[in-house]
Image (cartoon, rainbow, N blue to C red; front, side, top):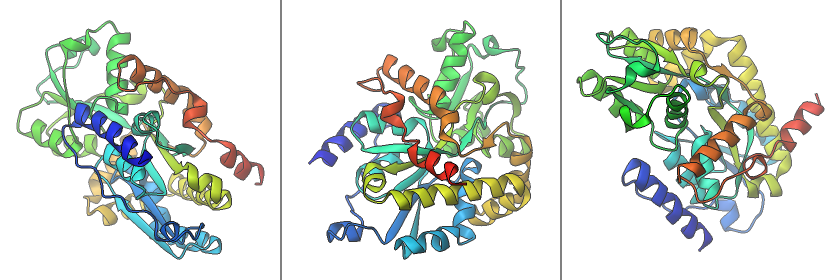
Length: 338
């Protein structure tokens, strides 16, 4: 019953910001249904973004399976989502154990009652504002009167862009900000239905290389070192199998260190897994302002500020604190043991 209530609240947020997205079917992990306690299948949610390459590398290199086997994990189930809101709906429904997801969707979900925490960081920055080639960019004020496609209200991109406009004295209502997923946003730009988009990589690089847009400003210039994607785990997993979560964090750190040391291979793995154009992905990784990280402490201040803004804009019914959103204890334990 509690999950149903949380899903109903989260669905209301979705309807407000995305339009209608059907709630996922409730599906507990098989071992939990049987009351066996420890899980044997780890279900990992992720999105096809270069921000989350660490998850893909860990999977494709077999690190998830190899590293988690001693903890009784016999199967790794990857589940891909287009955006963070349906990913959090799936976690509410009991369909995910951990999630690579933008930091903003968990704020709405946790505020609505989802028992989960951010246990590690995934990346900071990494989105770009791209305008039609024929438009001149002369600072934030030059966006007045333009239509910009970005992620939905309450998302990182929406929050970062609106905060940046307000901090520069630009009336948010003077810019026609349209909430949409990356694919439709890019299609609308290509069709001349938008003046620009503010999207996470690799979308900005794809647009530029196709000659359909030009870089205007990076998200790190709008809000330096802002949190973007994070690694979220359910409270149940943290409480019942903390050693497993510690190893998940260790493997995530290993994958993060690896992609930072081998960005070319990371691009190849991403392109092959997502069937993307390798040249576009290489361009994205070479030119984005993002950084793959693992320390959750890096993300706390900006994430708490996201939560404050979400509450101020009535996206959430209560203002969350760092304690509500983060559990850094397992990361600290992992790093302390090195």
